[in-house]
Image (tube, rainbow, N blue to C red; front, side):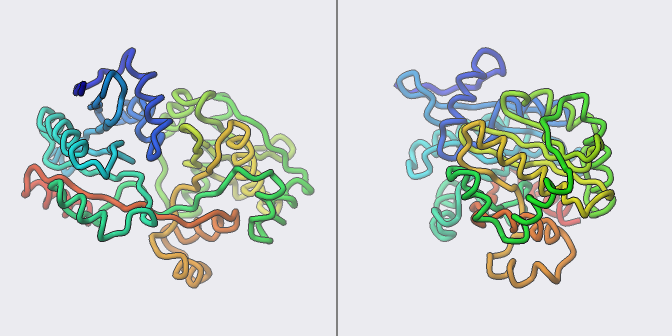
Length: 348
């Protein structure tokens, strides 16, 4: 028997989160606490689902936000929907549920960014699928489509051995130079926020407001998140926030001081994050975002480029892993004029 519905964020949360964690394309961006986090900062959310014989088989957590001077209401499914994409009937039924939710909220378009890897879904196959279900191509992505994923299944020595020689050296150098790492608490957030501010100013990228990082740690830790700090003589020099979902971990936020950089604290903090995730039983560690170029282009250009995510790639590439890309974004357009307005606004 097939059941359809919308779930309030109440007693159904544990069932939903277990479904997300076990799904082959599941992601922390589809978890209940991610919706709760975004709901505190300008988004609203709704969940739609399908059950067969009492068991969840597909669903989508949809976020909504008003953009472009409040004229455009965007519906957004980060790393979703969670559905058997090779089952056309299931996809069609779920999209109908998503469309109804978008209609109720007055959304002019819906953007989806499923966590499907491009090496498993060739571009032509993915395009044919989303067009068959009434979606259009979208070059505009909210999440970075390309990333580096590290295999955490080997032992720690083997993970270190798979790193670039310089990075492995820096991880060990940090320890030799007296850098220590530890698990942080909410009391350490002011120090982490100072590091984020320094990093944003140094590298020229925007950061969230302080309350955002505080809320993220409050909602996800200690079960599904950790703040790892690298310190020297009691001073926090670098830190990372790592999140888990099922057997995967993701490094979402990281920062380092302008002080004592020769002690390589950023390398120590990242290695601490990887070790923490491995200790939690995670088998993969997602470094979450590098420039959207193929690996040959990345390797040929990372020493020359200073803009965007290129400096980030220079750092992340050293930890080993595999460069992977998702299939990117596709849009469902409910109002053509509002879709064009959204594209114009994003372009600016």
